Picture 1 (cartoon, one colour):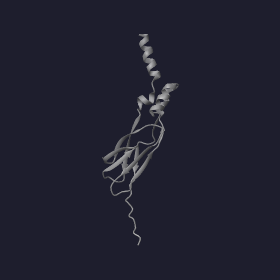
Picture 2: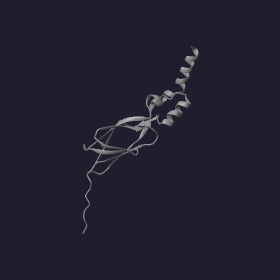
Picture 3: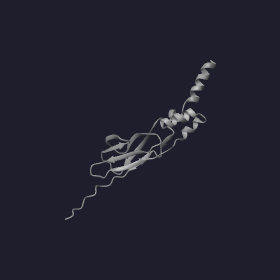
Picture 4: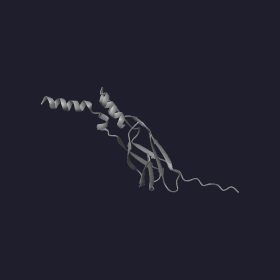
Length: 130
């Protein structure tokens, strides 16, 4: 019985908490001032024919995520999703292995906000010069 307790306790001490509790992706909501069908490109992945508000999972990690929205008749809209420290990582306490796993999976960071807005503007018409 003692061996089982030691094995289970060791497993908990060697785990990384943010990776287990938070995962390597975070769900966010993207809304827009235009309610037409859109194409979103998030970190190079295309999401076609989406409607706003749109719920999507973005990668956690140290780099910001780039969102580009495109709608016919409007200028493309860009958005950078910055990342902040995920306080769940603190549960690792002194476990260097846990901190390392959280850093490698990106789980120690999270998107700064849960909701983002894309602002589309109409396409500017070119003036003809004679």
